Image (cartoon, rainbow, N blue to C red; front, top):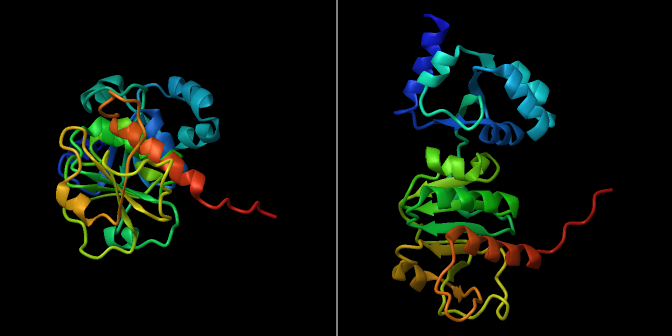
Length: 255
């Protein structure tokens, strides 16, 4: 088979392939590589421009990208779908995450639980925050796919940096304390967060499912100025994860 036809077929197959994802541009590709993803195919119509961009944005990966990315005609690149923000497209394997193992993880860092999120871009921003602030994982309960193209763009591909999984139902037995974020609870700055909590956030449209809130071992509220009714989902997650990080015992310095 002609190489260009093979490349086109690989990208077309992503429409039905649940084990692989398309990476649009240098940012998701750099994060996939930094966090150990298997990148099976990457192409660019302008490797000189890509190398210049890599030197600016990810010099640690400049040489690796030079050897990994193969050149393709601009016409083929344009035919592979919506043009990315930078001249590279890639295909990577999704990491395997076992929901039960993640929820039972002994990691003292919290796990973010998103209840029926509706906006893939916001979900991606949550993943980005979770990766930056050291969450043990992100569990999506129903709602949009955290590995969708829009979610990957919103997270800049940081789904490869933190375990991310979508489930339809929360197990009946949980090893971590379930903590609901809701305005009716005591303020975060008054009642500390339990260690290793499963932090449940409702969507901006629907809020937290009452049944899920009823299961919670505790409820906490983010202190806000009077008259402000809500926060962006990713902003709310960032505030709570920062507070959780502040309360974690510091790690001893190496050596």
